Length: 179
Image 1 (cartoon, helix red, strand yellow):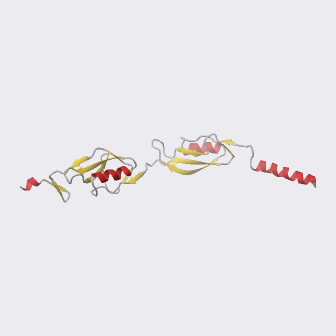
Image 2 (image 1 turned 60 degrees about the vertical axis):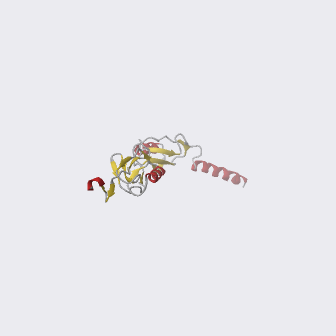
Image 3 (image 1 turned 90 degrees about the vertical axis):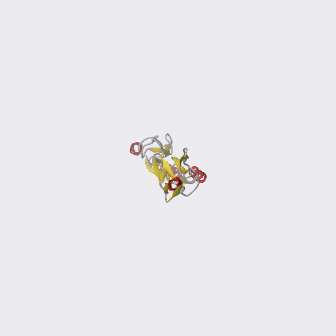
């Protein structure tokens, strides 16, 4: 009876060591900066799995380039462990342009656009009501209300100068012509 009581725990411990692969580890390769295909092949060669857990945007990185991995490279794991990967989405994040076109003053538009994360250049003045925002320009494009604009874009506001010309039905008219 004593032999059975002593033998069973040792047999269970030996089985657990074999079942859990105790002491048998694999070093995780660093796959950051590689394409998903190349990283997946390297992980598969090491008998490791992977799963995509997130997408982010990183300027300058290729679409589906591995940006992060968990656990990190050189970590020790068991065979078959899934490595969590974060990939570059390749799509620059955008946001809707705040409703400032023909809807607010220069001061309010600047505050709303800066709060949304946009950068502003020197504004352009046109004939019209003083400091009223008539349009917003990004590069060479005139934006429409609710346009999707890349985050952090540089925008130019087109505002009224307060000249003696009146804005009537979106047509600028010089009053001196009627005299």
